[in-house]
Image (tube, rainbow, N blue to C red; front, side, top):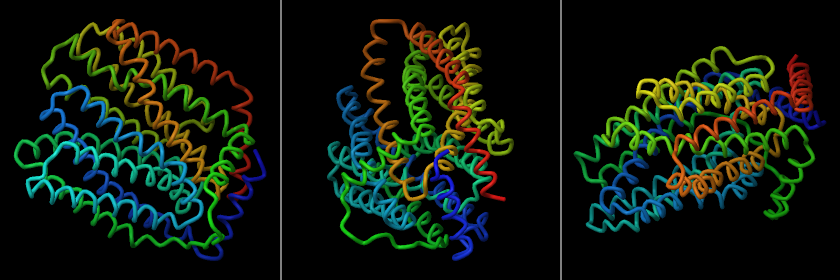
Length: 429
């Protein structure tokens, strides 16, 4: 690994001696995860309510496309700048301010709806503002966790965080549907405001020392360029990012075309789609619990590789839907593999990237992965109207397996990852 690995450890050890940053880390991370879970529940619930409201009131594919773009593009645009802020300013304050701004904008739109101003275009504005907030929160939150959690516990905490997110994503659609059936959308917006206030209140009790960085004017493009150069110079980070992008692109058909596959193959009843979503997220919860308790293999590349291999194989089987139960087993197993792929990747980035670069690197990851979904849909969406979805899933599954074999046979990556792990263990002794 690069010398930056020792810089990372040295910085943390200095903080430990000077400010007790790791003292009572379990209480701190518990408060943080609790605050994020409460905030995420409100945000996800309202997000589903907005999408479903647009779907039911417009029944327009164009409007659904616009809502998707409003939810993705602002996040992609602001992420690089958010990474610079995360490296320069107090991460805790950034998370709280962005969450607060989302709550305030949601409150304003809620009042507009209650006053009878219920234009769909206002919802596009809300989606865009929420997307901006997510673009700030996502890289900042990921970079914040290593400031509280000891290196040896990052895999476990990331696994727990993944599990919490999956649980929230299971609860949100059901709660959102029930609320939308009984209350006006304007009232539902207040849930997000309330959960944001509670989440910010809990998070405010998490104390992390912050050393004020250089106060000179920020040259954003120079800072972003430094982050990109840092990525290019670090071969391990570059390789991990390349594999992450490849697997994210290959996962798009499984994430976006399976509801259409279910509708075309098994029936258009709503319960089919509901069960499809729930089984996948239940699998993700199981995977999150397993990775947080077991931690995966000592060789994290092996953990990622085996999970990808299983995902690819069951993705191939997903294209052979003999029966709905068989299909659900496949989608459930794929859900289990998700935390085993994502958590080690995130942990390796957290452990490898220098502390003062993490915001920008995670912002780069957020930007690239955020752009993958719409770019993938540009290819896979029209293709699904020409080629049977089953064929798309089988071919993608085969490519997933091929990519996994290349990953597992990449001795350079495994050697660098192993050397990084050894240095990390020595730095914590």
